[in-house]
Amino acid sequence: MLGYDIGISGGVTAMNSFLEPFFPDVYRKEQGIVSSNQYCKFDSHKLTFFTSSLYLAALVVQWPASYSTSKHGRKFSIIIGAIIFLLGAAFNAAAIHVAMLYIGRLLLGLGVGFVIQAAPLYLSEMAPSKSRGSLNTMFQMMITIGILAANLINYGTNKIKGGWGWRLSLGLAAIPAAIVLLGSISLPDTPNSMIKRGVSEEEVKKNLRRLRGTDDIHEEYQDLCEACANASKANNNNNKLAIFQRKYVPQMVMTFLIPFFQQLTGINVIMFYAPVLFQTLGFGNDASLMSSVITGLVNVAATLVAIFVVDRYGRRPLFLEGGFQMLLSQVSIGSLIWKVFGLAGVAIVSKGYAYGIVALICVYVAGFAWSWGPLGWLVPSEIFPLEIRSTGQGINATINMLMTFVIGQVFLSLLCATKFGLFFIFAFFVLSMTVFVYYFLPETKGIPMEDMSKVWSQHWFWTRFVPSEANRSVEMV
Image 1 (cartoon, one colour):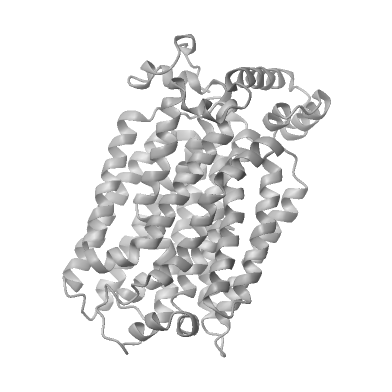
Image 2: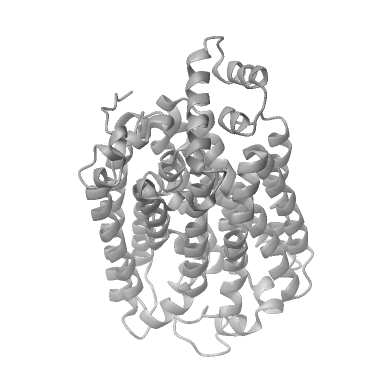
């Protein structure tokens, strides 16, 4: 759902049949009817709000979604999100004026908000600790497949005669929502959530046997019960402010800064506006859509790499390597655009330079897809104790959606104002976040979620915040 929507919006906003009736000012600049340099021809707050309004709605719904996930279970929130998303897809496909587009996007955002709050928690709680990273990375894998599917669909629908291809692109968002809805109905809820909500011991054990494929689940069940009892005691009658206690400072810092930095890599700029960006760089309409398909394929392939290595080599090595790769790519992209377009933003791009830009963007996307892409969802979902897990994931998703909305809303204006310098700005943030991970993020590979607090007590900086009774050695699995 989320991946399809990230990919579909950028392609649709590059279609003339969509721009002309809904965003005529942008259409006139894109056609050269109104003079504009390449950096500024898509600069329109109305157009960017069409893309970013989804993330505004997903931001607003995070606290209701957090309550729903905690009170009624992870599965319930996923189902609610899919239903709302279906309504949004119908509104967008049937849109006859801009207001209907915005309403549809807001409904899509509400649906996405529920799902991204619950799905990472669901995956982390269901998975055995030894394979938690790989299974949770499947969340990001599905996002990349959704982006690629949207890119391919946009490339096809743009060729439909009669100017209604954009309706098909937007309406097909109903397919991933239907898959999520029908699939979720048959899924069990997580044992952690079932125990917390007071489901009977017999039902929880039955669920555990089904999940683990063995009758030997007594030890895990006892660990879950103990964690739930500690959570109820620590949570002080479900007090949402419990997360702001001193002992949770390490987790709070990570759940704020990881999604904050994840969006400042500039990745969603590439994914939202890939066709628009490629058109800005001198590609034709079909060529820009095909270039976004290529980056989508790289995105999927690199995420597959993360699935196979995240539980073998750990989180930190991927964070650091991906950060270094993105840093070099952003600097190279900015330098190449500077050389071609300069400050004026007027140039004819040769095939050699065009292929070079696409190649550098692919290197950048690959670096993100096996590092900050999946780990930006995985690490925040696995570091919180049960008593504040839903609240913590709510904060993570809130920051993620807030930054996605801000970046999506201001990117085209920033590109117009800062020109090639925008890519150097993103490079600065990539450097900052890589240094942050190196010094402040401990390795969480193979640590049971119930024992995660011990990791912070052994870190050179975070040990000052963690209660002394948690200061015991951790056996790496």
